[in-house]
Length: 340
Ligand code: CP
Image (cartoon, rainbow, N blue to C red):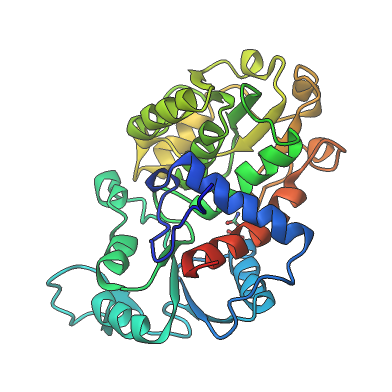
């Protein structure tokens, strides 16, 4: 079979790629996890721009690039680099001294890959939905651009999630009951991780159940797309407001909190609404309803808010394996984007 070639492409959303292409990155990630020494992108450079904090994404990319012989450069925007304007036509007389179009064009002349983390501003959903920072970089870079988590997707997390599902199910993810369960948090969190997790599960052909309280719907377009992708891969996607029923017989439970689009830009109203809900915290007791499910979470996680210590510290928890897989999956991604 010919090798699947994704050289030179941007990696902004899982759904920009076919399930076959995503699985080919993960196939390579498994090879690297076994034996990394035969892969190299020596002499290449990756510039990462962080508009928001990170532990896993930053370290796994930096260390991954180092292990492959490449040189990573990290810029924390507004701290050790100029703050960047992204609005087209902006009169730049405020506190942002450089425009993304200039920064992106300059960095394209230095770097072989550019990668950007930019969370939503959480004011206006339609504005955030357009991913203005990532979109501006995408327009003005001419080397592969990697999304390190934006308003809409966290595709690198999605890669590691699908890799972990493949490990958990010994390679056969089709029709496995996998639950993506909303969980509480002290503040509204972006939709990027659940969107990418859903797409990863769909690409694995899992029987996915998305469980969340009313008013916490994921983006309908993404759910619809996931339904189609899951069906093509032999699975399905269902949505329920009944967490207990969702957990019955589940083989994986992916806990995650996300915001309500119904209260977008109104965090106090959302938190008041959350107080009216029954507890959605994932507990050991609730996990007893499952078929000895593995527990997944992207991390960072607020212990005993999102999920109890007993689940996180229990033997069915795979969150560290999932976090480790960020390293292997992203190394495979860099190699594939630059050419195996
Ligand atoms: N899961 C994840 O992206 O972690 P960081 O925010 O620490 O990078």
